[in-house]
Image (cartoon, rainbow, N blue to C red; front, top):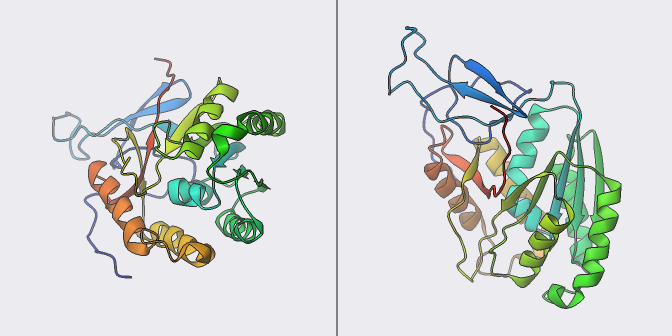
Length: 275
């Protein structure tokens, strides 16, 4: 697979202590603390005056100290959902932060799909300081009819971790299993930052997400190669190929004006800041 190459407008300095959720990286920063996030604004490196062309989009940056622990919870209805929806963002977080513990829960599987899911999760989570991989076997396509049992599973997960950040399915996803996982996420975790990821599919439910994570080319390639190589049971599906996954990354990168050209996108329904 070949990727377009373009010199970014701004070279992004590597800082493992920050996560830019939606940004164009500034060269110099003015910072004002906003609760759990930082407000960053760019100005011209050659002048103290700020003009309209110098002002960049506000960045949302996790402001824990560099050596602080992060607890991330990833929820997916099916074995490859997490990788497709937020695999690149997880890779980027693990590259920038050294004390990230990840709880990874997949709700539907069989013998083959469980083996694929574990192999993929172990590859993506190599950089995690701690990982808890949970694979369950609820019936694919029948989640609404097994809702009480799945809700019980959510309560068990709630006892196992207290996440700083949760990745789950998009609430308006047309797949019934995805919607139930999203609904139970919000029902169970009521004081947490929740980001909803998207899954391309036949149903045509791709929407207009409002939060973006720029990804570099190497991260995109690692994500795609992991999906294609680990989930060989899905190779016969007409949508399951490199072109689909790279197209999504490029489309969202364009919408985010990503300096790297690529991005993953999320829906952020609730965000609390302190000014």
